[in-house]
Length: 304
Image 1 (tube, rainbow, N blue to C red):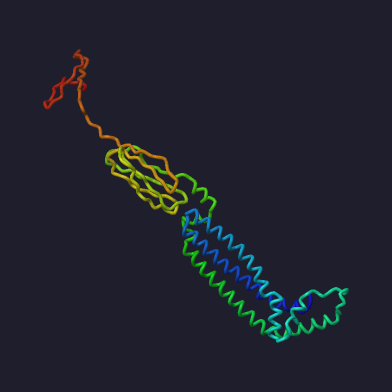
Image 2: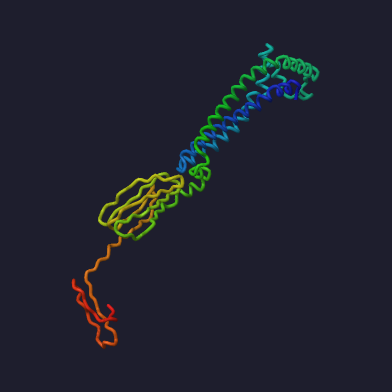
């Protein structure tokens, strides 16, 4: 490597690293913003998976752009800036970036060394002006990266990454599996008395809304929308009941099993028959009693 190439690399290396860092900082802000959007839309499956796919894509693009950013301030680019700042002939500095030609080409090593020395001096003299030109661009890159990172962090924090619904975002494969699980519907009691109520629990993993369907014998199904909590769960009180009730729940294409709550009818007395069992000392067989409004006199020791 020629002395000119070495000095150009030293001149541009700090800016190359800074600009690559700015690219990574910008990508971090974009990743945080995408994560915040995914958290806000969780536990819906499609937004969660889309957010993760975009995050992977952004990381890949950021690594590629970071490598390209180093070339933007590589020796050829810096060499042309030196030529412009020094007002020298185009190619007088950049032309010395190529490796020295082999001895068989007929080029004079002494002439090449002298040209390299002159170009190195030009680079040294033009370095302050080139540094200022590069610094302006580097500051713009770093400022854009810092703004992107701050905005992304704000979106991420606003999405409550530690909330209950966030688990659906942090575990996308489990969320995908939950999206295929059936709707679960349960009641606290399957048999109640007339006038009582029942507590219905609907669980739909990886969902935010569901529909509770109810009907009585001989009636059509009646829907009732449910808003699920961060765990995909909703509880509703149904009643008072005066007849049997059938229940089922649905969310999208998923459905639960049908449940039935039976209402017990109140007991009543249709007929009353009394039998008197007399004590043994009377030697009298058992006989029916006719209930009525009057008092019935029976011997002592008789069992009704």
